[in-house]
Image (tube, rainbow, N blue to C red):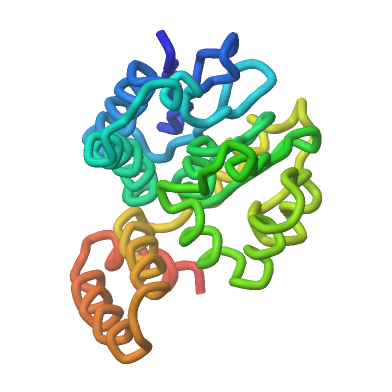
Length: 251
């Protein structure tokens, strides 16, 4: 199977890209399995958070290069590419905590999968590779736009128009990742991070996640209107009432 799933007792699901002989490159089969895994995670109430990682030396080498070896009609290519864009968007919009445990090389669509997660932990020996220019293409599936929104225009220029390789430490300096951890501590650090994220109310977490995405795309006034609507719904939830009662009891 190109994707492995394992769920811990605390409800944290680890999804592992498992095509190590191809550096976890994303072909049609892997993309379909990954889509199914995230759809199932969204539907399963017992899955509380998701860790995404890769097997072997790479996180993901992106789209399989065999995809570029055929003659494409531009319309067919756009339709095919849209499927992969939808997969990345599915990861980004899952209303549960998502953590990328970047164990090795990430490039192309593999980078986009990592950047779509809420938190990105990277092994000290891992790196991001922006090789699209050498192939006569550009980062897609949100590869330019998402990077600008994440780290700003100036730093995104440095990454996309400068050198091809971004080390783990450089990615941390640029704001591409949350933390750099020892290679052999990566998954345990990801589980520790999941525990911190799960301390929040699930509904409040989901609302904050969607509002953060919205805030990057709308003006201040529109953002505040949606914040008010979300808050007015959250204060009526049982999660909120129980949290307030517990806070009062601790005083």
